[in-house]
Image 1 (cartoon, rainbow, N blue to C red):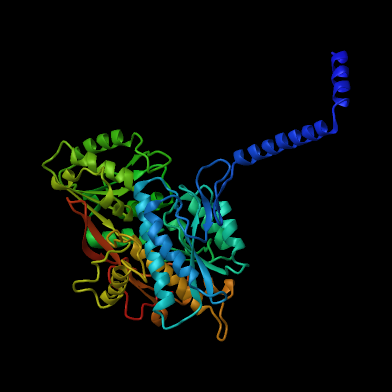
Image 2: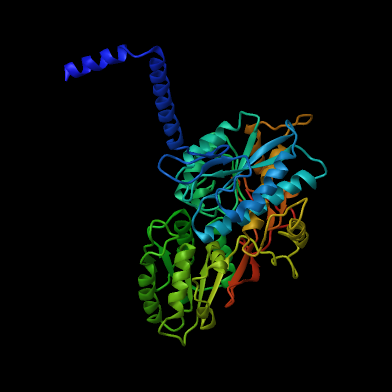
Length: 513
């Protein structure tokens, strides 16, 4: 072997100089090809400005400041409208508000919810920049995606925090559409960092301040009632006695279902039937084996005394749909039942797996909606909201079919999500502008969240979902709660406005101490 190598070296030494040159060029070519191959094979994790795929995921998470639509075609038109509005703003004249939603969700119901919240937030942005008599600062809207189930909340919150000290001038986060453990952690960290948060459709009591007199989320405000307030409003409407009702609930539950269960259980003290649990998958948008459990529960419902006619349901929308389907197939078809539940019922209007025939055979489903476009149309109460505020939003939706407001694609107010997101954004804008000192263009970050206790009386926000009058903890006081019934056609029919205090707020709208 050594002799062979020696002979090879001697032969190379006898080559002309151009042979050396050729060898060098060949080596360089091989090196270049290797580097090019490495570059081509490099796993580029970026998706768009401010958005990337984590090492362990294909989701694009982070904070988007461009027209990136997270691979969801249904979002594209509205996001283009947002981007067009953002690009029209002059540097130094605006602050940024982030809409925090699971933009990469794979669940069809959640995506529909996110689309409507996106549309509502954009319409509020457009109104703030064009229809508020030139008030400033102007509002730039960016999209914060923590992932389908919020698992990447930490990196998203870190990005939002960094945007408070840059030319972005982030001054509030809105959205936080669902009451989940990951969203709870995100809100806790955002508020710990001093970033004001305005929750849109979160209703869990433990994702609110003021419980047991404590404020674990300083700077958090909400436009939706707590589960307890929704349950109180539902009870005031239904006037159900404990001996005629029972409770079916999610065990172990999540922040939404747990607090809804607790609120319903309080209403049903003394019921001879107690509470009947079911255990869903960890991801409650999945089907799991709960249909089997619900078949058993409906058999037991038929075993109850004939005067029992109401079932309170504390669960997410997938399990709610399964329960309704099972109840429609009950053995005691001669008996009628009303299912009463929280705002997750709004998802059923677009659920193709719902057995609508159940609603034609003795099963009624009524739920507490966060908002409804018909709530203020016919003979509305004198206080608590107005038809004009809803009409203003409806005009914006109509205008957004074409430019310059839109187009934002098909938009619907029926499920209440666009309405509540619109109101949350308007509350964020209200806090930002109230915190802006005279003769200055930009409010200090720390001052925005301090505005929430003053949002009452003449300083309330006249939302399309009703008056937003906040208590000292940032929770809406005696907020209007539309009671909505699911029709056999799968649509939502407004029934009546109910109130946590069993009556509309006074014209002053001042929460008691």
